Length: 122
Image (cartoon, rainbow, N blue to C red; front, top):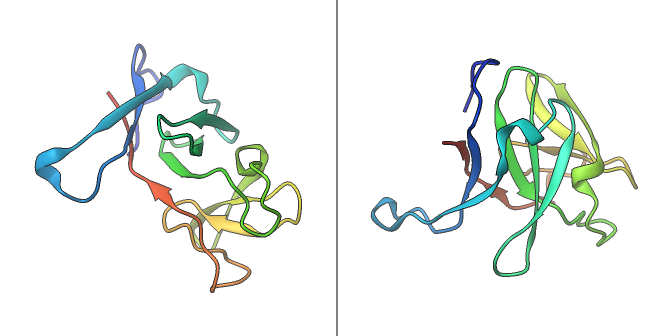
């Protein structure tokens, strides 16, 4: 989702349910203005999982699991963001593996991925 830079008073929400569109469950995480473009924020979900939220410079929002599958540490929200061949990613601050923010795929080891979440501002 891409937002105009002047958009204010919006909440960042994360979809918690399955793909069943009739039973959508959205969890309000924070105010949109708390997401600084290019930097991540960690949030605790009701079931105890952690999610890393990102907003890029164009206003697009992304949500992935905060746990780095290589180290086991909940640190992906502290990683550096960038793009590789047009794919937005976050690089783990520990071992530097890059994770696609759309698919969750590790760009450095295609056999590894993290969970992704649908994110919206509303």
